[in-house]
Image (cartoon, rainbow, N blue to C red):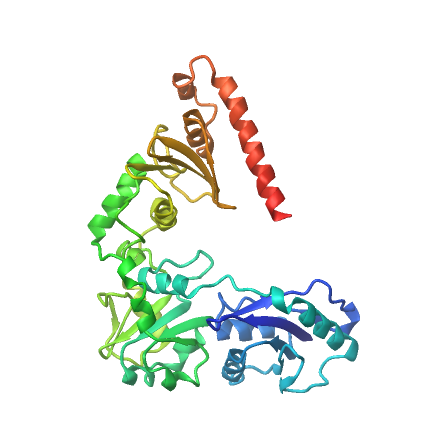
Length: 405
């Protein structure tokens, strides 16, 4: 089986697959267009993927050079043959005749017509935020190494090869000794880049963080003094999924502040690191603590001179109940300086609404619009306000759908 993938390398060095819908491949060609996610998978995952799909030849079209490093790394334990072309269909590695002429022409036409439309969803600031706070997306599994921070040159040569085998293929190494990692596939980034952003993050104790989360849970209040969640937020709350490593002072740590020691040996293997990580306390999933970083991000973009309250399924404003497990929601109620809004976080549109809509929104988010408690707030006009509220909700859904078209 042959597989073709078109990948765009962005300014950071991350590689993103693009699937061309207009390329026609016959089922008899024994070829398929791939969309492998390099961000949430490691080289070992990639090799398993190639074996599972019985891919004997993997054909890559790319505008960047980092894919060459990935292929060189994977070649040491993969049996698949790789062929690499640039976006002008010039051969970089492999066999130029690996594809039929007709299919080659289709791909070249697609690239020439669509090259200007390729874009990246990633920013370096987002990666630095994750490195500092351990605030990783839900689709990053436990123990997939996304970021490595190296504080001294001698650390790099001792990092065990199994650590790199289990890094995300879009992982970043932060180090001032970038010339020493040219042979490694992760993206390299100078540590001074972190200094541009570090002032946005505070050092807070676990107790101070818990107090801020409790104020949100019980009152809907958000800590307005935080521009971002504090340093090591998820580690301090015992919710880290171990996606970062810090090599410092001849030791390996699991947190930015170097408080959680993993090993006193720089050459510790990946499996040993996972084992040491298991000794740290880890608590059950807590939804309000999990979504709190997102709410901090929402609140810093809201212009409120005085108090700010948010309404979600996980906090109490009027309705005493709250969700104790994660559920998807795309609407947030906002009370800012005596004005009332509903934010649709799918398209980031904010609507100013009557106060009564926020009362109904809280019950709506908690799936309890039939509650008798609502009659206390709408003694004679409950149905009238409900009708208006549902018309408003239909309007939001239409606008959201129209924006997707």
